[in-house]
Length: 180
Image (cartoon, rainbow, N blue to C red; front, side):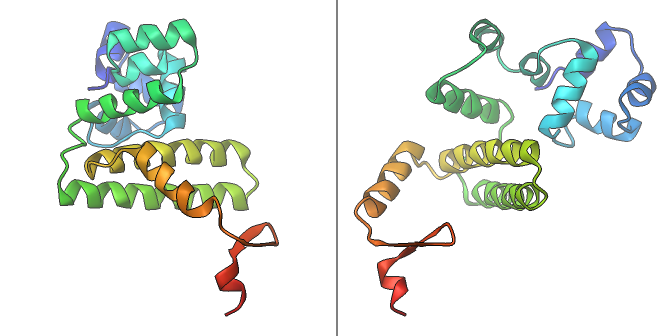
């Protein structure tokens, strides 16, 4: 559960003031506070800066995790993987059923569109953010499907490691596809 409303009220700021100061509509701020709409990374950062609190705290990550992030300023892939799973579990996003898997697959696809836009527009920040978002959605999707993401990666690597082919215009083409 995020802390948007809690932090705003502690600072004795109205939704209208937040909207005027940040350029985010009052309607959206209300939806964000009620968790009726998910925030984009840029919005989390904007609001955390506005309220002068860490993004992780504002997102409602467990206090121990917030302290860990603040202390180390960097987490290992494994720690990030676990933090994403915990974040998704705290929001009841992982239920290991067909419907949640399909919903998460839709999020993966949405993020693919965003990275495409970032790359096509030479927007390095958008591409980097979108790549991170893709990783988050894949971690959650793997959890929904009861897959271990590292096992999936190992399987894929074992398939490609001895693959023969040719790189054409920066894209690797399998040998079997070269002769079609």
